[in-house]
Image 1 (cartoon, one colour):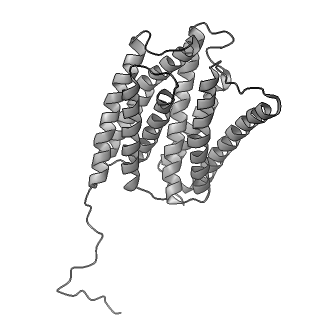
Image 2 (cartoon, one colour; image 1 turned 90 degrees about the horizontal axis):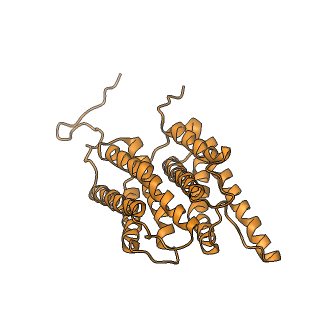
Image 3 (cartoon, one colour; image 1 turned 45 degrees about the vertical axis):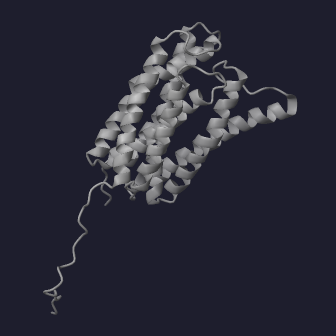
Length: 284
């Protein structure tokens, strides 16, 4: 039997040495830490400062509900996933970009609200720093095909959510075009806010759901990474909706209940998808 020869002047072939995170990843870590700090300041001020948010009672209550959800869920999730990513956790490195996307989407409502408030520059800074950090994080994201068994059903779930959201808004827009009936929201928000919510969903959430769903269905490495991040950021924002609904009902707005039985369905499904995509699973 022939034996492989190793040249005395050339070291044996081996895996490339681990060089650790690159400068872009480290910059993304520092910027994400700044996002945490800015978010704590903004959300805390929104909760404790009376008269900060202009507009009708339902809108003020909605923003305060967002602030509460951001403090008790958004900030902790971003912080824990960031720390895990810094420590080299693959799972943390996948959840962390999702929470940055959550931060961008969440504070887009504050930035693009037609009315100004005293925290407008801070809200703009959160969106800009979160987007910069997310962009840097994606350049060095650890992409690999993991949990192959769960990828297609998770992708199907995201595509189903994209279709349901598009269909719901499509019906509202057809009614508007055909009979002049303005679109409405579960919360009786002003038309400007209904328009803003629909615009953000159709330009930020639906395309991401479709892209992640298709790539997951194809079982691609980027599909797995984008799928986890998408489930995290869309699911996390559902907590904002639950808190906003509670605050609106507590403010005495008519015909708004504190909660509905189906309110937890979407976050529960997305959480299940995240767990299925990140748990250890050895395929036989």
